[in-house]
Each structure stands twice: as C-alpha cells, then as structure tokens.
Amino acid sequence: MSSLRALLGEAHVLLPSEHGAHDLDGFQRDWRKRYHGRALAVLRPADTAQVAAIVQLARAHRVALVPQGGNTGLVGGGVPDASGTQLLLSLQRLNRVRSLDPANLTMTVDAGCVLQNVQQAAQDAGLLFPLSLAAEGSCTIGGNLSTNAGGTQVLRYGNARELCLGLEVVTADGQIWDGLSGLRKDNTGYDLRDLFIGAEGTLGVITAATLKLFPQPRARMTALAACESLRQAVDLLGLAQSQCGASLTGFEVMNARALALVQKHFPQLAQPLGPQPWTVLLELSDSESETHARGQFEGLLEQALEREIIADAAVAGSLAQSQAMWHLRESIPLAQSEEGLNIKHDIALPVSRIPDFVDRCDALLAQQFPGARLVNFGHLGDGNLHYNLQSPEGVDPAEFLRAQEDAVNHLVYDQVMAHGGSISAEHGIGQLKRDELAQRKSPVALQLMRQIKQALDPLGLLNPNRVL
Image (cartoon, one colour):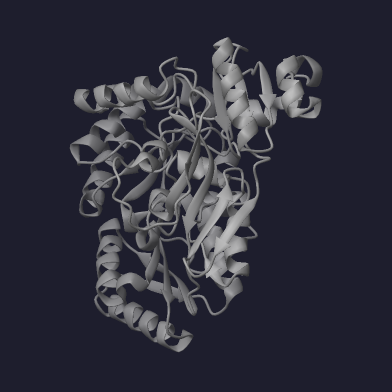
C-alpha cells in the first residue's frame, strides 16, 4: 500500500481497516443492494497516468482490479467480490471535459464525467449529446461505454457505441492506448474501440472518450397515449415511424402495474391518462419549428385515434409537462426499488415478436408463480423490455427472489430465445448473468470471447469472473 499511497496520496487510498466497511459501502455495494463485496482498498486516481501506474503495480503483485464509474450498474459488474483481495479502481476523479469541437461535432471527456454534466457541456455549446437514462445524474461516461448503455433515445441516435468515435484505454499491462480520434471514417485495421465498448472493464480500463454531438432540435413534442393491447402499441410505433421518420426520438411503453407502483410510491406525480392497460410515451424532435412539430404530432395522434390504435392521448403543452411525463417513466425503477427486491430482465426482441412473447410468457408465469406481479416497461422503439417480476402481495420480496429467481429466469430466457431475442439488451452481463450467458451463447462465440480475453488480459486481473 505504501507504493499506492506515494502515487495517489493518502486521501485517495481508502482502506476498510481505516475507514470501516460501512464507510466504503458506496463503493462496495451495488445500486440494487444485491451484491456487497469487500475491497482490499478503494483507489481514486486523478488522471490516466495514475491509472496506468496502478495497473502496472497490480500486475506486478498479481492483484485483481475492479474498475468502477458511478456504481449505478444493475448486474453486479462494478463491485468487488467478498474475498477482500481485489482493488477497487474508482474513476470518479477523472471528470474533466478535455475539449469540445463544434465544427467537428465532437467532445472529448474523461471517463469519470457524470453523464448529466456531459449533456450540460454540450448544451452550453448549443449542441446535443443524446444519451439519456434514468441514472444520468450519477452514472459516468466510462460506465456507459463499458456496458454499451442504451437509454431512451436509442431509436434515433443508437446505443453508447454509436455515440463514441474514439477511446483512451489503459491496457491490462499498464500501457496507454490513445485512440481518441474524432474521425467518422478510419479504415486502418481492426476496430479496437469496439473491443472495449461493452466489455465491462474485463479487457482494459476506459479513461477517456471522444463523443459525437448533434445540433440541438428546434422543437420537441411529448405525449402519452393509451393502448388496449401491446399489439396496438406496436401498430402505433409503425404508424409513427411512417409518418415522422427520423423525427421520432423516443417511444417508451409502460404496463398498468408499472404505473400503479409509481402511483403507490410517488403519489405526487400526476398521471394524465389514469389507469390504462398500456401507456406509450412518444417524443418527436424537429429541426424546423415548433409549429411544424406540433402539426406533425397532432396529425399522427388523430390518425391513431381514427384507426382505433389508441383510446386516448395527452400532449405536453410545456417543457414542464414534458419533463413530468418523462419523470413518470423514469420513476418506475425507483418505485420497484421501494416495493422491494425483484427479478429483473433486460431483454431484447424483434419488435414484431414482442406481443407474442409477452402473451406467452405472461401466461406461463401466471400459471407457475400465482400472484406474482409483472412489471413490464421499456424502450419498445428499439425492442428492449425491462420485463420484471415482483413478489406476490404479502410475500417477502427477498425470500421470493431467493426461492424463485432461477426458475423464473429459466422460463423467461427460454421464451426470449424461442422468440429470437437476447438475455441482455443494455445492462450488460456482470456477475448476475455470467452463468446464463455460458448456457445461452453459442460455443463458437464463447470460444472467441475467451480467446480475446486471454490475448488482452492473460493474467485475468481485470474485473475477473465478470462476463466470462
């Protein structure tokens, strides 16, 4: 520890023996409170050079490193195990906006920059960084890229991978790869950037990124629409895409139970449409004018009402009303957390097959787990559902999770695979889905992944036992 203290300063080497395990809970316990590890020490480097020096020291002493950003992950990928032998590498002090290039529509930031601060820096320059998710006030860019985060605007702008042009990475042997290119075209060999995005810190430590920016839209329109069935929600999506094209930037779906939990735990949040089987949240971003956007939006909703695709709609008349509608959607995970531990599924399916999957899986779960409450919401526009199961009323959530999680997962993932889907859309694998991945991924894909891990981290010191 003396070498680490000399490198970082005593204030940035946090030892459980000195601070107490409870004082380090913010680093050692995951957001869902499912995983509670014990670190050998928590390290807080200030720059990339210090990260590289830490990796070199860890390699020399054969000590495993667990990189961590804002610790908002949902699969246990950013906390240490319980052995007390792993170093936790917190990147929160790497929080500078290094440069912003309006002409090139790019911004280069440290990995520890909080997403909301990146959004604000772009906005201050009259530009847009469109990655948006519920944890944006505390999650960091490095974590977003390490899990290839999605969020609410993937339909228009793509996942984190599509929003990143270049990376700076500390490799497993402590070298610094400077790939901070602002180029949109660069055909000079293997795409190293894509190896590290979505790798969850198992191949290298992302320390900075060059991100894509976009012009700010001139107008945004938001609405809630009521559908009697999920099939109607899919029909509404098709109509919106045909009528609005690339202007459609958000298309979220929420079932009645999801919004009922929000009403229960956050009664102060207005729900303009009241209880509905399915509620869709739509957003359009227009580059012309608010008048054009409103006309396009109202025309879309009128057609949907005429065709009986929707039963009712509420259009936001102000920025505050738009934010309130989004707040409803973003409060669902918080409401579930208040209700107690639950069995989460972050799944992806072809949009066309989502209604059949939900009908089939709902029926099987109701049959095998009577009384269990299905909380279904997510990014219907890009085929990503958060298909979660809450314990029956009166049943202890932790006990239900312990007793039924394996059986529930087996049923749900069988149906996901049968309908051509994926067991992880945007949360990653971490330790939560590691064993499931080993069963569901093709042997050839797993072999290739292991060969990449062996080539880039032969000692297996970077985030061990995560993903693979």
